[in-house]
Image 1 (tube, rainbow, N blue to C red):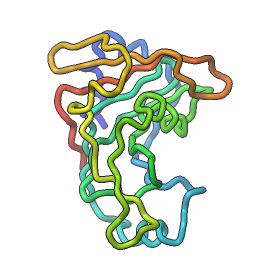
Image 2: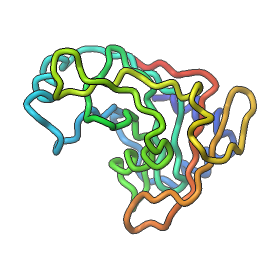
Image 3: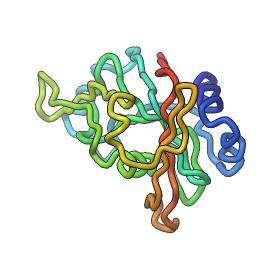
Length: 186
């Protein structure tokens, strides 16, 4: 977690202190949600039981930020590939502030990526499960839209206007920050 915060701090430089001061909740335990409790099926429960307690490598290539609302790390690859709900982008919620909640990380990523990046395929052994194999954010940076507002030292930042997140919140400006190098977490 400290490596991720340090990398984020370097990437966003002066904006990080302001962003963190506006956020109320920093999760005690960082995790990648693969299935939300309403999405469990027999196949997903069986897969979860099969891999329970195993170690995985998670690669973070970018950070999505809605200032004053939330920030999440976009997972670009997992090893082994992770089974999850089809079409979801794996991520780690870093912080939130009401009215935003961790569940809004999915909405933020959907708004920024708009289906332009996906990384899954049906699992080889069970068509009910979808496996996330990975995405290459850097290679597809130009497809994402947004307005590039920073490109220096390997860090690139796209700004997206009128992003809708929490129901009680006005449309916001959000940012996608490409890290200078992918961050590997085990």
